[in-house]
Length: 518
Ligand SMILES: C[S@@+](CC[C@H](N)C(=O)[O-])C[C@H]1O[C@@H](n2cnc3c(N)ncnc32)[C@H](O)[C@@H]1O
Image (tube, rainbow, N blue to C red; front, top):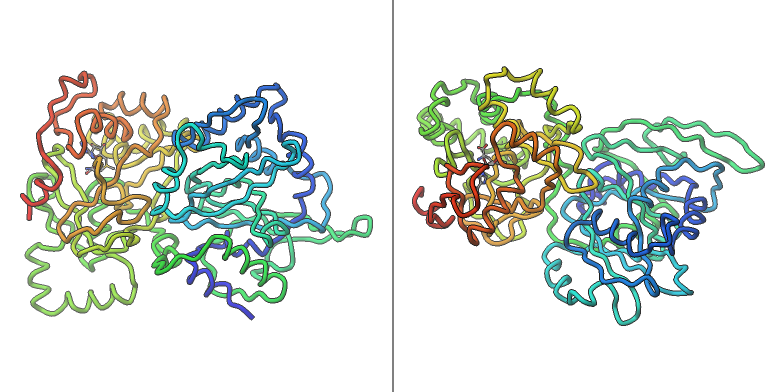
C-alpha cells in the first residue's frame, strides 16, 4: 500500500487533481483518432505554419518556430484542448486517461513531437523543465534551429498557466513516460474533477451502466477540495502513479505543502487597503486596525510597531512565533517566508512593497497562491467596479486594478484580483529576485522582493480599463522599465500619456533603495 497523500507531499504534487491521476476514463481512443486526422493540418485549411503560429500565440513569445510547410507539423494547443473537452460518443475501457496536476513550480514542460512515419506520429514526449534549467535549455537551441533538432524532432517549451495546470495524460503512454498531453482547463482554486471509476475512493459521484458487454462509467462532474488527507492505492494504479511521478522527475527539497493558504482562508476580508492590512494583522493576532494608515508616508505599524514591541517584551511574540512555526506558513497570506509590507514612497503615494525579514536562499519557494485570488471575466470587471466602489473613489479603483493581474493568452480574458492576497504588493523590477514563486538568487534580509511583470498578459480590454482609470497595466510597467534601463525603477510621477523620453526616471537602483531604507 502506498499513501497517495504522502507521495504528493514528497513530490510536491498538490491537490486532488493529482489524486485524480488515478481516475481513468476511456475517451482517449476517440481523441487519438481525431488527433491523427488532424496532425498534419490542424484546422483543415492546409496551412500548417499558421497552425504553428496559433501554437506560438498560445505558448507565449518564447516560442518562435522556424517551420516550413513541407517538413513540419505541430500541435495546435487550442484545438487539442477543444478535442480533449469534447464528450466522446462511446467509451471503451481499454484506453484510459488520467489527470495530472502539475505543481506550479514545475509547470514548464518540454514537449518533443517526434517526426516519424511520414509525420503521422502525434506522441508528445513530455518532461518537465525545472526553472533553473530553463535558460540553459533555451540557450541550447539557436533561434534558427530551436524548433527542429537534428533528428527532425520538434521541441517546444511551453508554460502552463497556473489555471491550466491540470493536464490529461493517457495512462498507457504515461507508463512509458510518453504522454499524450491535453490541456485541461481546471482553475486550481476550483479543481473540478471528472470522476470516472471506482478507484475514486473519496465517494465520487458516478454511475455504472452496462453497454454491449462493456462496463461504461457515466461521468459526473463534481467539485472537490483539492486537499485530501488520505487515499490509498495499490497494484497497477500505484505503478501508474509512480511512473507519472517519476516522469516528472524528482525535485529535492520541495517545501510546498498542500498550499495551506489555499483552502483554509475562505474569509472575505474586503478590498480596501485597511481591510487587507486588517487581514494581515489578524494573522499576527492583532485585531486593532491602525488608525494612521491613511497617512501613506508613515511607516506601517506592522511588525515593528510599538504595540508589537511591548507584546514582544511580554513574551507574546514568542508564542506567536511558535504558532507560526507549527503552521509552517509565513504570516502574510500566501507567503512561505517571513516578509512584511512596507511603503515604497519612491513609487508614489499609497504604494507598498514586500520586504524580506529573513535571508532567503536561492530557489526557496517564496509564496504560494491562495484562494484569495478572484478571477473576473473581462465582461464583469466594469460591473464589479461599479458595484463595489463609489464613483469618486478613484484611488480604490486604481488599487483594485493595480493589485491584480492578467495572465497571457489563452487565459487573458480574466482579471485576477489579489486584493486580499499579499502577492498583490509585489513590485516590478527588471532584475527580479523572484520568479515563478521562487527566489532566483540568495535574497538578503531587508531586500524588497520583486518580480518581472513582463510575463503578464496585456490584452486590449485590460489596457483600456487600466487607462480609463489612469494607471498602467503591469506589462506596460515592465515594458517602460526595460526601455528606461535595466534594474531602474520608474518614478512615481509617470503619466500613461507620456512618451518614453519624457517619462521622468529617478536614477534609483533597487539596491541603493534597499540600503537607504535599512
Ligand atoms: C501588484 S502592485 C504592487 C503593489 C503596489 N506597490 C501597491 O502598493 O499597490 C503593482 C503596482 O505597483 C506599482 N509598481 C510596481 N512596480 C513598479 C515599478 N517598478 N515602477 C513603478 N511602479 C511600480 C504600479 O503602480 C503597479 O500598478
